[in-house]
Picture 1: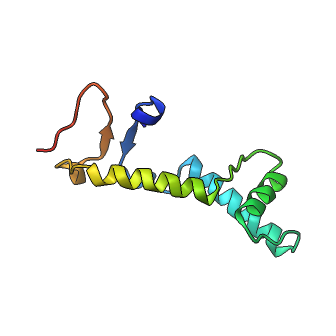
Picture 2: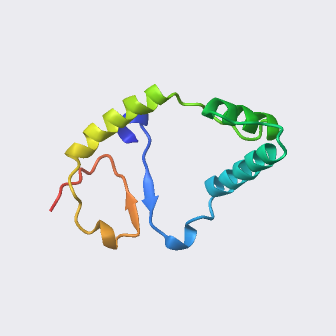
Length: 110
């Protein structure tokens, strides 16, 4: 995130918080909205663009769905795979509950 967007990040590993965040709530709303639209046969969704359009129409613009073409995903996948190949293991992360990215302090493997 720091390199791509100039944003610091934090990742917390707290099992008690899984499934209770805003993202999960929005996902549930979208799932229910799509299910009701298809169930009532008002929409026949055959691709991602139609899915996004249905959400936009049915949620009255409260949720913003961004369509990402397959080609863009593939380009990002290639870049991310290249990054993963150079990632080094950081010892002790399985026992950690929080990782905080500090750009001025380089992390070196033990």
